[in-house]
Length: 225
Image (cartoon, rainbow, N blue to C red; front, side):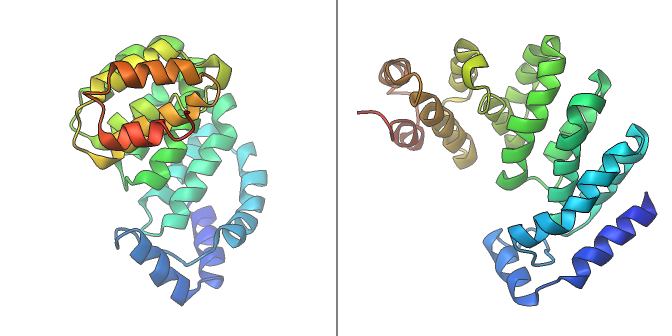
């Protein structure tokens, strides 16, 4: 997989944009380096890899995903998570939770968490529902805000399959946090499900108005009358 990695890096490097590289890094508060690839260019460059690589063995694919995650450039992390999503339904196994958690807790920021939690974590718990409660319990009680945010955002794309009572329970366990990214995630969840369950969300906000953060209330009430 080192050869594949070198090919990916060479491809990305050949389309490097120095000006956009700085802009992107500044936007992320200088936490990550970039090749400066705009989203359309990056997606086009990644198409051949996402089409051809899934035929490789799981062992090789997970090795490549990990190698990509070790790179300093954010575009490599994006390709890694997109590749894992592409192969997830077929190749993720029960023991892979540790690997998924390692992605959540390394090079962590909202952009990767907002992909990993509602997509990769969703695949995992859809396949292994018995692992959900004990994992979420551990994440909620951890000191890592990105595990906490993941415990919330795993509900985001559930649509009609959402366990809304469990979502409310998770929200309440994290209510009172001073972390922006936790309170923002709570508001995002409430806003998303207010589209389909406006009265239910309105009642929840009203019932817990004193304990929900102003940010969560403001975001969650955006579509409510």
